[in-house]
Image (cartoon, rainbow, N blue to C red):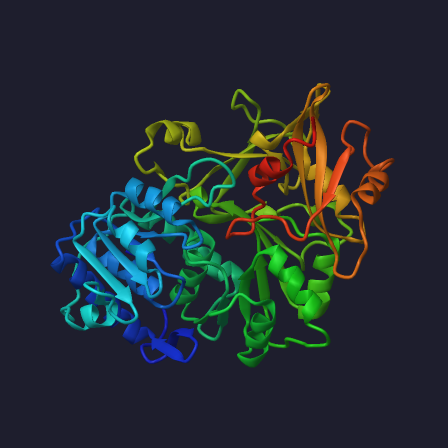
Length: 501
């Protein structure tokens, strides 16, 4: 079993608001969590739901579940009550730990568990016991259970840009492959101050926090996702490392003013492309390494990385997602599953110890995801260059076919990001009687800029082949995104779907 807590016992491990939890205290609390789960009748393999907005309790639960042999299922608290109930029913959980204020929503989730345990972080609510009272009553004696590398310890539901969320199974071996190596690659260590500003129901946030704990860093769990608050925290606490999604990075650059961040070593970002303006602004404002990572829940997060200090901004490789980590294989395959030469497009496949063993209770989806020889089909289209740099072009299912021609949304989006007044863009295909689909651009204007859909369509003329050029463009205040920053294109198709016809 990997040693998750790498700091000295008296050093701060997790900080949120005024609360500071040392490595020794985190270890003790995780021990009590494990004892409490076992005392409640939770058996090895049982699922434990966490409906929590954040906080140190998530990591107490994760480490406690590992020790008890149970599986933590962090719930996306941004889902509706009906969506949460659907996920809870799919998980077939034994227990629930919920946050204060969820009330009827938590009760609805609890109704889909076996009822062995329901405690709440905060004051007790009716018959639901408080988490702190429950924890204090548990044995402080640590359970000594061997954790096999293939044992599932996490079940993370996909954020779902479309379709029904699936429970991705992640093992001790998956985490042990990724977390220690990534922590070293990112430069995390005992002297690091790591800012955790992304949701803890997603593998990006979860593994970022685990990397800090494993490396002995001090991890600050942000209580607010406000760009202004994050900037204040980064300066006041001399943050050295953080993980952000590009939309947040863009907003922070716009608000930073003349502030400087001398202690900052690296900003890791992913989940979506970054436009050249934001990349240049981030380099100027923060003056640190910018590490663009690419991965997915099914690969335990990042599998490739592009370091801004290694590639000149004008180099075409600056638009890539970098090269695979040394312990990860990446291949681009044709529809038959055969590797294609560098420069030729296809589907991105990957193989490493980070690959999930599959989806919970969904053998058919698992077979579609994993090839018999261990390769995982990402569903992303792209190509590798001669140097092994990976360029993503589109989601396989997002391909637009207009007038019989294939249009890659990412290619059109990359061109439109060159417009000085466009801050964000998503390209979708809308149904069209004559062409099958019509290329449509949904854009967000930069603050203070006047921009119309006609402007966008006219600007694209001459910069894109006729069949690739958007024929419809709409300006919106913001793009709908998942909690991890991915654009929910299915929502845009639903909203604008009738315009193409």
